[in-house]
Image (cartoon, rainbow, N blue to C red; front, side, top):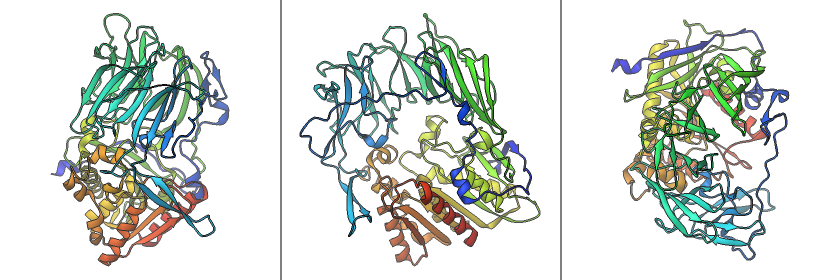
Length: 613
């Protein structure tokens, strides 16, 4: 239907001096358009809510590993492959007397070999990698003293042994530990309360169920009023990630009545501060609600400047650092009172790209393929753009969960490589799609059991609208590039529309979800046994023969996130189908390239588009 191809322009950044200096690939890789905060104006809060210019040292909890621990039993290290918002594996009680320590039993988990070229004759490095549908790790939470003495182990009996123990949270008095226990299928979660002294189960405070998935991402935030009440965040009750005021008896009251996703910032016992996308899905603003007394107040908006606000609240919640930018404002740093009054204007950043030839950049929206949502995009125009000429188009794509590529930040949250390619004469298009974050559960969970379907449909709808709107784009010279989930999307698009995409560059691509990790893969796809049709439809192995253009795949040989079983199997399918494919391995690199390897990577990607597009 024609209305689906409409595009709405929200903001435009005009072309600058076209004769100014051009970016090099190395500059594009090493510089960031967001590096607008000089060292001398970086600020933090100390424990007494004073502004300081050196980041306060955060003392890490330490403890001693129990003697005689088998190699497949791991204490105090990464569990669940960093999913569920996890980044702490040793969690001290408020008074520091006790530690909640993760124990991971990975003895049943399969190993995957990585090749180490640095040894005399080469050797393999075996990593534990639980693939979808195979045996996973078994977790426990131990209560320990800093000297390594184990006081107790939580007596968790919910679901089966391959459950997830997420977001451990101590009660303010250090007597209890709260754990969000999730079944392996990630459809059911129970917030359980355990007694630290003996690990005994006290009660289930609340529970969640969702036929798509439940994804606990936050610990509990106890109020600073001694009441024992706490703030809990979920998207499972009203379709958006809202905040709820709860107590240990199971009372649950929503305190952020938003048709938008929110994130907890702080509380002082009287007010709860949070950021929210309720003004716009591409903006982030600070709000607060008063929770003291019987009634919860209506939300009070605190930041009003257009754009994306990053908030650092002082420990006593009397003031905050507000760092924000918008499409045409590089960056501002303010110190504000809790109600938003500006106390100090610390920085108005200069344009970090001022010395370079800047191209026209556009921020806008376009309907999703099903017509139910607006997807946001940014578009770079070629340097010295002439609408009477024809130019190639590069689509940069990620498109996966927990991402938002486009926002009302400086120049739409650009990557410098996009500017580089625009300077070289390309249109560069970036769009978010269904399945990405900050848009509510219906938008995010549209990918359930069918990764790649809604995402690619939205990308193709946006590209079609773009091609219809701008005749200067050469339809015979369209390329696509992405990394990780974006690599999966790159090859999904290239095989779905070989008539459209002349060049595809995929980095570290997922090829078949059965080879991806349990925690992430099963959340979105279930298992190969319970969702065979979904796995078959999303797999790229049977689609290699559909390619019709130049394809480059790049990957680090030490990639322990997307193991290169994916890429090598796809290359084999290309060989069998008689399809040319180029492959470049980075022998000492993991999933994300660093240092000189990253510069080399983008030199290769740039050259590939310059040569074939």
